[in-house]
Length: 221
Image 1 (cartoon, rainbow, N blue to C red):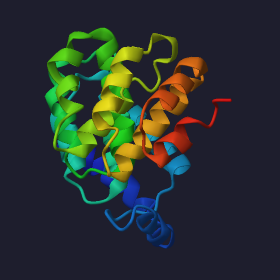
Image 2: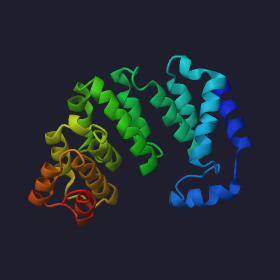
Image 3: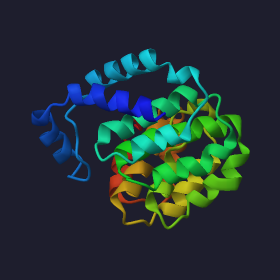
């Protein structure tokens, strides 16, 4: 996969935009450098890359993901996540520790919030990973894992395990961490689109941070 990474690097470098890179880095609080390739163009370049290399027709390669994750510029991390998404329906459950490594490495909301739904897709196929792993994430010292646990059902809609969602939120309701309070609000807001009555009752019956309440109440009358 070294040649594939070299090819992607060449493609990205040809489209580097240093002018764009400055505000993109600033938007991410200067945590990561950027090549300055905005999302629409990056997605087009990814399509070109996947078509030309045909790597998505090959077996899933963790080393390819790691190789991209080791790069400094954030666009490589985004492409790594896109690559994982191409395989998500075929991946075995033993990939979960690898996902945990990605969540806890070079962590920020943009990567974590993209990986959490992929964990959710795995959990649909292998529900046992909830008890085996995600339950532990919900109370982990690493708040990015806690955020991932709160958000992994974000796209479940009617399939949301309400008791589990509320349990994870309850275990994190007293957190002072902004990204946890925000995740709680986001999860509640999304679930309120499916079950507003339940979410309203939960918000009214529990002590949550003002940010969580504000975010979670957006669609609750």
